[in-house]
Image 1 (cartoon, helix red, strand yellow):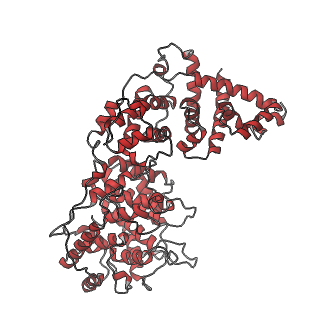
Image 2 (cartoon, rainbow over the protein chains, first blue to last red):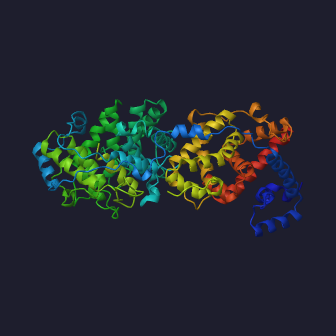
Image 3 (cartoon, rainbow over the protein chains, first blue to last red):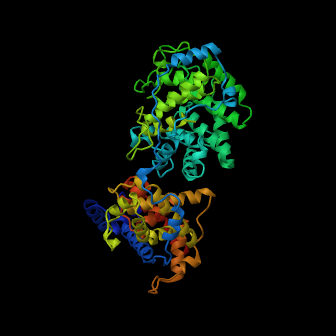
Length: 421
Length: 184
């Protein structure tokens, strides 16, 4: 058969199957029929496709006598057929507070001395005493669970954010579920598994997790590793443990010589506080969970962070101007979280982070770890005010308003939920 | 609450999903009855055994309930269900690194009550040929020829452009042609 008559060489060859199905648009169908008139190769091939297609269509449906409805209903019996709009609504006792400025908290830190390492924080938590706001966590997790994409990810694009942040937002949502096992463990087990499987599907064999074409460390690497480490610790699943281990290995390998993470060292670009904070967060979480060999990397990272000075509250992420508080919150909050010295913080850093759930998360973690009544009272005040701001009705009941155009409502809700850990 | 007419089949899929979101169990049961045969056949054609197909059908309907708020009437419910079904299939094959079960004689030998269906060995050949395709190509053949979805709906289910559906269908037919030609 001459090459020009072979289907492989015909530009319209791919149209054959759809033409047989009658699914080509009219003009394309007409063009294909004209082509057939002059192409014996395609004519022969189409005849073969027709025989196959007829055989496929002639295969009868598998006879099916079972009724799946009872089994499905039995599976849903526990939580089905209730009014979904009636998902648990937090009842918040309204209290009048005088907002405590962060300056007061900073004074506490100054008084206590700077550079308290995170590890003692994780080991010495004092339960909060006194009147407690009814937790908004159950309704928040309910909203998060119902907004999960069928792929297992959480896609911010449909909720006021950007789908470019899918990996990072998915990670922080998973972390928020995993940090509340008392609420999430049974009810949302499948939700969390599907999310973790999504993360693992985005991991390369060398432990890189992300969608970026760049090999540079990204915030998503830190966030995803954090979630995987937590999941590994809670489940003991060997596949998840392996994935977490690879991701941690990647983090260790990509640490710069000065202890930071971010842009490539020696190329004249500053290291990235945001990336460093999340990478450190992942390493410290892992060490607490029992992973060995991470202390040298952690020490070097903390040392770099302590030496990094604030310039008007902004560090290396200066170009992300559209992120409200973002530079300030990540820089300051990260440093606060890791209990570095805040004396150099900007005026913005001292505001109550009601509209900045990222900062609220870091601040509550940092201050909540202090065995100090004033700091704990501040955290309770913040949580009460944040609970007031949770959406109480409608389809978004349980969520918090978007605080930035990246993570949208999903990101805000996940971070706010973490502030109630 | 809107009273349901005695004949649920009069309601459209979109209306039934609205009622499901309101918590109407009878609406959900109607949807299960409408689509359970279609979904079980989907999984069998993807090369699951009959019992696995039933299990995966159950999983898919449970996820339909779980994701009821994500369904938008602008897309056919059938396409949405097949999207959920495909995910259930991928999860199942990925979970234990399973390979699709070999063409199941017991499943394929079930004859419809009217006695049609051709010869068993012809059906075995075609099912085996289908099984030899990659997941990517098999899914487009199953959705197109067995589930009767349009190319646009197949594109929606697979999350790919319509042009990709066309090219995958072409590649699948080429592979089926070669496989059946070698074994025919």
